[in-house]
Amino acid sequence: MAGLNRGRLGSLIAIMVLSVIPSLGFADAVEWRAMTSMHGVHDIVYSNGTIWCATTGGLAGFDPSTEYFDSYTFLDGLEGIGLNGLTLDSTGGIWIVLERRLLQRFDPLSRRVTHTVSGVREVNSINGMTIDQRGIFLATNVGVARIKYFPEQDEWFWFERFTRLGDFPDQEAVTTVVTAGDYIWAGTAMGIARGDLNAPAPLTWVNFTTDDGLPGNEIRDIAVYEDLVYTATNGGIAGWDGSNWTTVSNNLTVSRLIVQNDELYAVTGDGLLVFERSAWNLVGAPITSITSTAKDDEGNIWIGLESNNRSSGGVSALTDGN
Image (cartoon, rainbow, N blue to C red):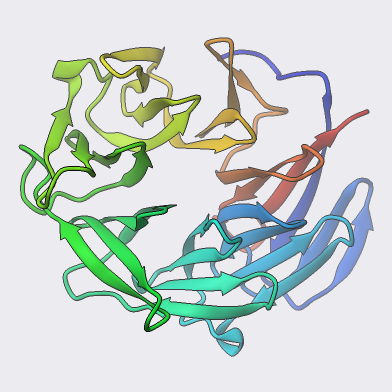
């Protein structure tokens, strides 16, 4: 693993979300803000000046300019407080994955829930989500699903499900899903399935495994970066150039790949890495329990932290030392 990343990145400012009554205190450069039950952060996104956090206790918004936290729970229209994921849509809305396999859309401007999509009986978990002009694609425990918007009803409905992904077993669990051009890419424990979105239903799926150049069959994540598809597997990271898979790191244990502001990041057990000149470089100091990352308008890198007890977790920012 490479050494510390670029010198322009300076002090680490931690803003921790704890599970005690609201309080405020200062110690050196670390500011502690407490909010009930929101100590574990599963995912974060940045939108219009606010860091939004999917936590164990609801949705939290942090404004770095005012250092103000706001929280949203049942009282604000959420159907649950255990949130697993966040994804931005093209209009600035935030789609929330709840533990009860529900989806809700939250409008950051009006600060309210605008749409709720109930789960279906066969789907026990939603493991990932991607949004494009064709709808919302979900990685589920029984394949891939698509949800579409119907303007006449102003509602989102389950539109179709893909349970047979090529030669993989029927209803194979999907860990992650992305779209790139005319294709949808689904990661599983057996490899990757690629579907042609221009093909008539049912889609034509092609499978990729270690026999096709993947460093491992267990797919942790897939991301599109500079028009190339990258995947994190149990055997390392590989990139697809349109014809072949090329391994770009061997035996690097990565839980997530995240594209932010034209940079590719990898979340590992040892910290956050950035892909530069075909090498993975550590961003700042080693930090464990990272779940996600986002960049604000100033270029500061934010990370969400999982909590293993009631005195850890939250969000942290690596700021420009200049």
